[in-house]
Amino acid sequence: MPSRPSKSAGFPRISDAELLVMRVLWSKSSSTANAVVEVLSPRMGWKPRTIQTLLRRLVDKKAVRFEKRGREYVFHPVVDEGDYTHRASLHFLDRFFGGAVAPFLACFLEREKLTPEQIAELRRLLNEPSP
Image (tube, rainbow, N blue to C red; front, side, top):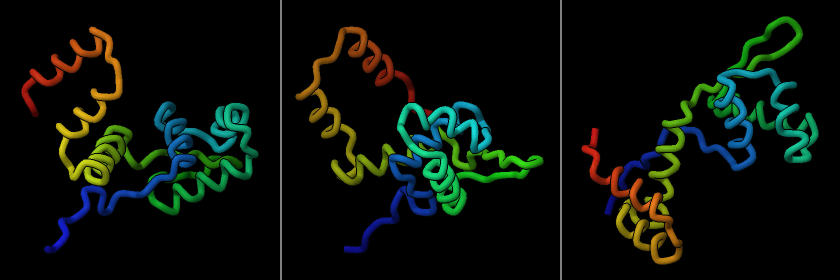
């Protein structure tokens, strides 16, 4: 049986470490390498060189672009956070649940205790018309 095209085809694969860098860029819409270092170095214990390597990888993957301003490089996310989250969610569903949402929710709800507020929010979301 022929395999169907991946929902993430043409979308960059971003590692967990790179995702932390992307989150900094998404939160600021653009940032210098030094600003990313200031955020992640104390929190993660990473050296500036590590963060610069992650930024370079993201540029190579075309998830981030940069421009030189004077002596600094300013990095801008190319990949939209909402689009990335959606694609990553689809990839997760495909990988573990054959693309089906109901088995995922059943598995999750069997093992997690939701608050009444969370249940109400889920009901509200399920009752909203799809776009």
